[in-house]
Image (cartoon, rainbow, N blue to C red; front, side, top):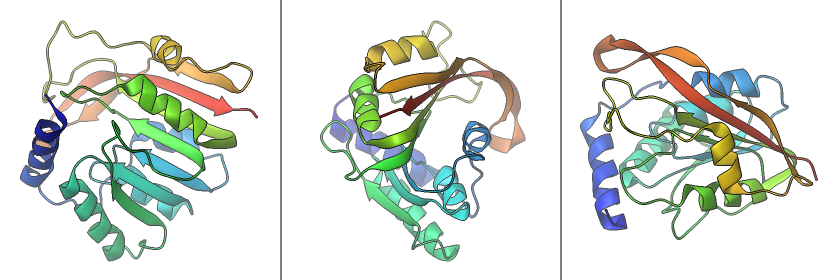
Length: 208
């Protein structure tokens, strides 16, 4: 699937979903970010914007990016409706060819999976290099498929956090893996349907 097809796919995904009025943040973000003082954050694959809005409410200045122009436009409008437009900037990026400018104290990539080709290791490596010293890169991946997933193939391989870290291939003298585990949780899908799923969590800190 080429970039044009991917844009069409993700625009279609977001266009067919009801417009969110107050989307929830991901649980793994909340449990990770309750400690650090607010700074500048980058949300890769922002989707409906729950993470970006939650970070802004905690005082973070957030750059939120997505391939879908529909997602970006909706988040921009949502930030205005919640009076968070000074803290949330939504940008459209094809991470194959462009990466948000600036330095960040937090980069989060929640479920940055796609049916089109994406060099995730290159994207996450760029994210690690965009961190300020003592900044955090939080990568949360699917470790299993929910029944409502767009890609529920039972034979799918879900790389472990350590495999993801190895693919990013960062110098341990500059970046340290602080967390690499696979907890389970109860997820809620469309129509309130629930299922137990596995998350793969990788947390990397830039030390210098």
